[in-house]
Length: 275
Ligand code: SF4
Image 1 (cartoon, protein in one colour):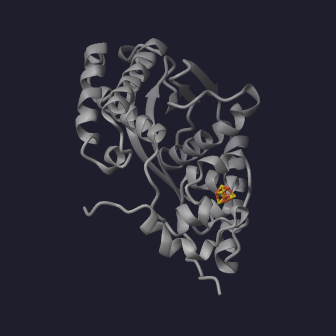
Image 2 (tube, rainbow, N blue to C red):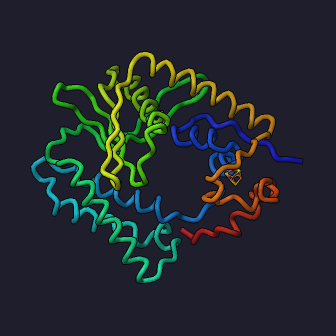
Image 3 (cartoon, helix red, strand yellow):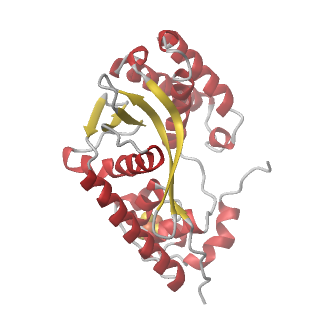
């Protein structure tokens, strides 16, 4: 018999996206919280986010290219002893390539915009908003004021920029951040923007009352679906090209696996070093 699952009392924009991509992956990752090995692409993104977080902690005139590189070096020092890096098991040559790619990303960011011109008011801002029976929560990379005094929410991405047809779906997460910030501060953001650093591409949208209503309706509906999945222990699979990147393939029925063995086997398959 399948185990039962506790209904979560909060959701992040990325967890709702995981549920939409594949409910079974959501179960493994967000409900059972099973261990996974680190991914080089995700860790590279985290390292660059950390360097930019530190950079935007400085006064605007001090945000030079040299400071950005110094903070990347600090981020490297912070990350190197962690499982995020040690778990990648990089050879010396692979490690050199990994850090060189982080440097390229920081340089590409500096080509996209001049950080000295950004009037940021918050970085890595924790935001929440109550919805129907649960809390929506998340971290915003950067909040700034534009030339007209309006709030701008910025989110850095270090992966490939999406095709034109996919941009609006990628913006969903930022509309959720806009909703939370508006709920907390009573000020509707003037714009939201995704910065695809690697490709030097920026996508901007304007939140409206209509998009805010859509966030509420859509997220409440997703929560209801998650609640039902937990109480009925039914998390369907959604086989797609993304399965190639899924760490839970061996426990997925689409690949001949048994999901109920994952709780016992994943910690053995992906052991974490003792803290
Ligand atoms: S392998 Fe594919 S279908 Fe199976 S859990 Fe992972 S993402 Fe879902």
